[in-house]
Amino acid sequence: MILGNIVVELIRDGGPIMYPIVIVAVAAVCVVVERSLWWSRCRWHRDAKLLEKVYTAMEEGDLKKATALSDTTPDPVVRMVNQGLKHPHTSMEGALEVAAGHELRQAGRFLSAMDTIVTLAPLLGLLGTVTGIMGSFSSIGDSELAVEKVTGGIGEALIATAAGLGVAIITLVPMNYFHSLLASLQFDLEAAANNVLILAGRKPRAEGTDPA
Image (cartoon, rainbow, N blue to C red; front, side):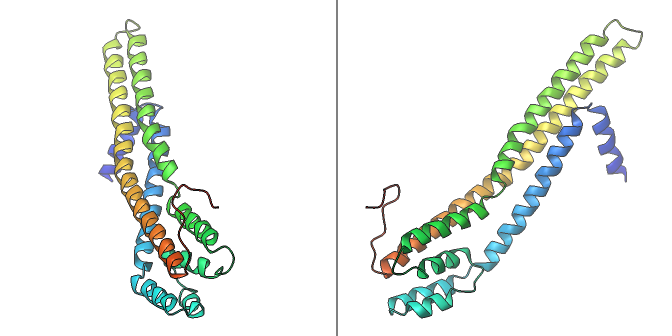
């Protein structure tokens, strides 16, 4: 209760710019919680043993068994392999690329929103700084309470600045962590796709080159 009163008082003392900062902070918390839960489920669903079983079936030339093993799995890497195995005689490489792109898009959701929050929050804090200082200078000489108005404007500026920077800093750390997880997943997907193409007797295309 005391903490809630302190937060409400800071929002009030920080001026009108604090309201959009609070909205941005709530959005940041929601995104971080959602992404944390998603990556936790993703790690829980990863199944390296199942992937090895699929590779073994492919080495034995039993594509039907490999497809059946990978048919109902929540592992994003095995799911991608399954999509490639369903197109063994037509466009396996294309199917793998499309499936990998889908998995990466799911893994990278809201990262652009987090990047926007990291950029927007300090700018809102800076705007609060400007409006607070402007209010301080405009109140000079207006009344006997000019000193209180000046200090109030400076306090408003500092609170808004601190709030904006705080939101950005708190969002930046998990955002970079999620980026590292995304890069790791991308590497695993590319490695698995190359392994599938090799086991299927196809030479994987070099990254960034066009198909013949």
